[in-house]
Length: 216
Image (cartoon, rainbow, N blue to C red; front, side, top):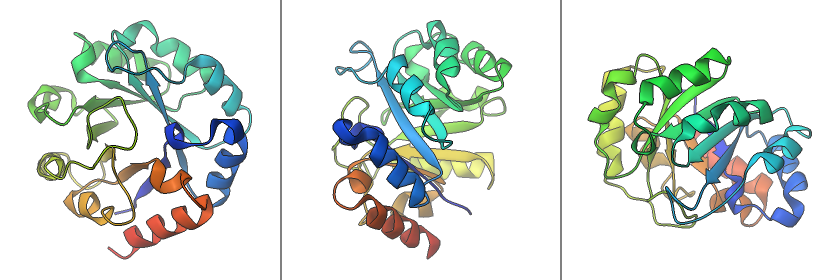
């Protein structure tokens, strides 16, 4: 199973964001994970349209935009206009999961559905055939630097059995070079990493994380 590494710019040095993105791209990371937080669904605020508009000009990396916002359907089109390739929204943040997926896919973008650590997978099972990816949060959404929640691996394994080998199952939160193999062995194939990429040498970190996955 090919593993995709998606560095999360939430952990980047914002004063040198463009340079760090280019280094991550040069080191072989194919995706860039962009967390959007509204201060309502989660108690924090982060990137919005101007940041995505700006960095879209400097890289061809896949933009994996993770919406941690209420009523994502109000903003989906605008994030796609900014250059998103994937738009992932939280199942807990909308009453129209299927409608959000349809909105994203009508625009030619790929759709992901995220669930928080305590949310059962039952809420998303009716939409698996429509979605392109499921994101299982391995920390509580809203803050970087939290500890990885190992119990989510059971959910990942269950999803992998249901979806088969090719479906994209993403994990986000607390992943580092010491524990990255655990969610991969459980069935995750898209790995978001923030501090584990951007603290220290970006190039060395990406090579180490990628090498650990390649050994599995």
